[in-house]
Length: 366
Ligand code: IPM
Ligand code: MN
Image (tube, rainbow, N blue to C red):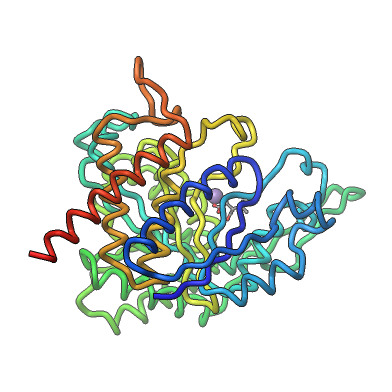
C-alpha cells in the first residue's frame, strides 16, 4: 500500500502530538512493507509567521497532491487581535474547503481503563461507542453575509444549508450506521430554525433509502443533556457544523479527556485527519500534551485512506493496552498517578503496537 501523507503540524502542541502519530504510521509501514511518505507543510499561526498568511498556496498544492492530510492543531493567542479571516483558524477552515471533505467523523469511545476519569459514573459511560458525523463545510462557519460593523455595533453570520449539502452527509451517516448498531440520531434546533427544519425533512427523506436504520431527531439543547445522562443510547449522531463542534467537545467528558478524541473528514478530494483537541498554547513545548488523540487519528488514516482495518485495530488495541497498564499524561492522570510525557506515551504505544503486530504475524505463520 502506497500513501503520500502531508503533515500539517500547525501550532502549540500540534507538532508534539503529530510527531508521535507519524512514528506510529512509520511503524505500521515498516512492519507491513507499505510505502508511506511524509511531507511537511505550513498551516495556521506558523504559516502567518513564516509566510504572512495562514494558508500559503504551496500548502494547498502539497495537500491536494497527497492521499491523506494529517493535521495537528492550529491557533495561537498571538493572533487574537486579528479578524477571523486572518487568524490561524481561517487556515484550517480554508484547507477543509480546498480538500472538500464534508463528513467529519468524530468517534467517542469510553476506554475501560479511563472509567474513573470521567466525572460521569462508570456505569453511565461503560462501553459507550458513539460516532458523531459533523457536517464540515456549511452552516454558520461558511455562510454569507458575515461581518462586524464596529461603528453601528452590529454583526451578522449566516446559517445556510442547501438540501444537497444535507443529502450527501446524511447518506454517509446512514451508511456508517448500517455497519454499526443501525441507529441514527439527527440533532438540530427545528423548533426555532428553518435551516433545522430543512435538515429534519431531508434526513427523513433519505431515511427511506435505509429502512434497516432507526432514525430519531433531537433538539440540540436536550441532546446536550441526554449525552451526559445516557450516552450509551446513541450510535451515529448526525449534526450540522456548529452543533457538531460543540457536542463533540462535550463528548470528551465521556472519554475522560478531550485529548483522547480523533477525527477523519471524508467525502472530498483528499481525506483530512485531525484530533478534536486544539493547540493548547498553555502547555505547548513542555511534553505535557496527550498524543493519544493524534495516534487514534493515525489509526483513522490507516482505516479510511489505507484500507488497513487490521492495522487500525492494532493501533487502537495498543492505545487501550497502554492505558490499561496505567500510563497517563496529565490530562488523564488522577491523584497520585505518575505523569508520562508526550514522547514516553508515544513510545509506549509504539512498543505495544509492535508486540501486537508481531503476535499476529506469528499467528498467521502457524
Ligand atoms: C475543531 C475546532 C475548529 C472548528 C476551529 C479551530 C476552527 O474547534 O476542529 O473542532 O471549530 O471546527
Ligand atoms: Mn471544536
